[in-house]
Amino acid sequence: MFSADDQERLAQNLGAIRQRIAAARASAGRSEAVELVGVSMYAGPVFPRGLLAAGQRDLGENRVDHLLELAAALGAQGPAPRWHMIGHLQRNKAKRVADLLRSLHGLDSLELAQQLDARRSPDLPPLEVYVQVRLDPAEQRSGIEADALEGFVDALSDLTRLRLVGLMGLPPLGEPEDARPHFQRLAALRERLPVAQPKLSMGMTSDLEVAIAEGATCVRVGRALLEGLSAEARA
Image (cartoon, rainbow, N blue to C red; front, side):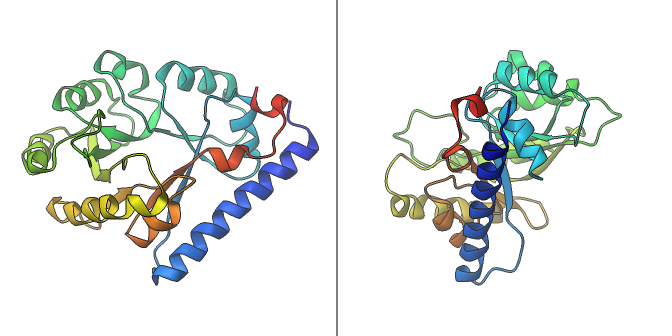
């Protein structure tokens, strides 16, 4: 369970991240809000429960099995989390999370989009999706090539249970400043989206300031939230 000390430390970590976001927005002269998604980083249900208690409802996970375990453990008690899938989602697992997610941050194939559209309940709002763009051809990561983006987006227009909200990208591993040209490239690509005020999901613990300076509207943070917590708080 979360001790009082762990809950206090988590609240401090969360506050520090929000201060970083606010400072980065001010430095970049940006007035619009930047959404924070708190990532579980393979921690057990105690950690997201602590995040919810601290007022952080947008929670991210990159593995389907772990996401389902966390959602089941949290149950219906307390504030309801808004789940974000931030990792690669395999097509054969789409049906397992189609009704659970608020947002998918890594849409990378038309087949996956069609699976989600077919499985999403009509009683729910359309699933928010970010198209993942491959920012570096040398990286072995999922994503749509930039020159195929417009055709891919056109193919999504008939899928009524999905709502395209923006783009997501992962820069190659490196120093925070090394990510800047990749974030700039992603920001330029959003002009190709037929979406009013398209969003950009980019930036994590180490490079969120650079991402916000280049237009991020959503950052995904896990490591900085876990700093200083006990082993029990991660279990």
